[in-house]
Length: 175
Image (cartoon, rainbow, N blue to C red; front, side, top):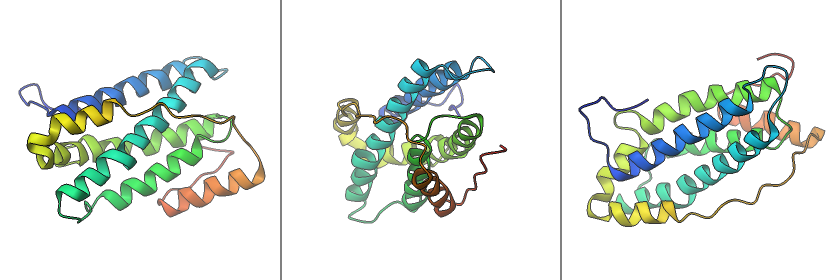
């Protein structure tokens, strides 16, 4: 979701929306061939998405809470549940069903973050004169160490539980 042509986005919104576009491009590259997942592109997508989630969880949401006098944003709990579901979906080896579920969650999730009155716009407004400092922290967020994929029954049970907590379902045999 992009702002209309005549709308100006704040620095936080612009930076994080551009990161969404970069991640979307990487995921699209990873699944460009119907018969296989490009592991190189998927690995970049996976690391980038985990870093992006880290930026929001460790920098953006705490800053918003601080700027609101200790009161978390109403959407923070939903975003955190989504982040947990997405992160667990990145643990197993990617399959058609896993990638479809990631895409489905991101479609709704990104709208909550990017839309009018969403997380990014709200944070730009709350930050005011601190927006440049907050942007610098986001830009300086470290890369994330990504562990190898794991497809154990315990991991797949964890994926199902995280999805349920966030209000989603998952069936490996269909999308």
